[in-house]
Length: 125
Image 1: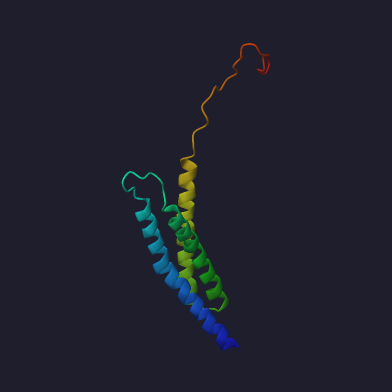
Image 2: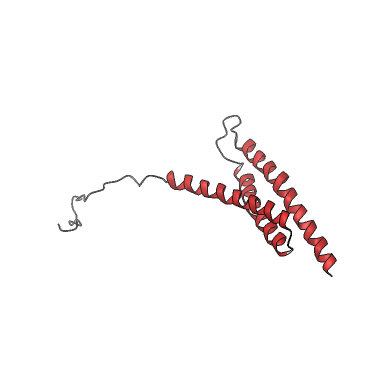
């Protein structure tokens, strides 16, 4: 029973590594190429590829770390742990970029404006 579990762990770790090293960069490349406007197209069809790349780029190292740590494979644990730290760093930088470039407040009066024909709804007025 332990040999089957060890074999399955090896297969899963190898598939996670292949997915992380080959599939994720391929999806990023497809997303970048699909996002290039061709003949004036302004939509972003590459977002689906980039979303899958992000989910796999974070999920595969997480699965790899858990399996490698539970089967006590130090080399695999280090490999997937470093990949997971990189994925967390990229996600954090992306989050900071979205926070820094938050949309401006909606335009409109920032003070009390009385409307003709209505009651004065201004505080203290």
